[in-house]
Image (cartoon, rainbow, N blue to C red; front, top):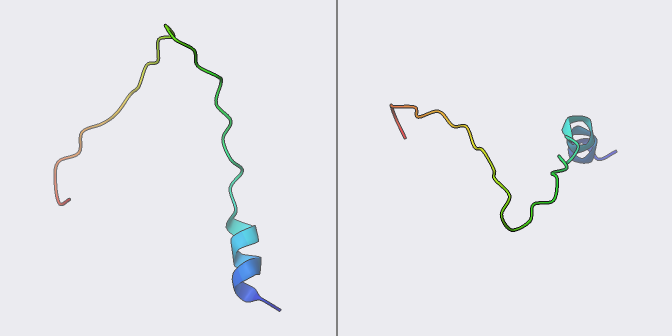
Length: 38
């Protein structure tokens, strides 16, 4: 019994699917600037 394999399958997240982008498409990105230890 491979415990690592079981753990990987338990915590596996489905891959997110993104829409296809073409030339001229506008993509909005939101981000947060966090100050502190880097």
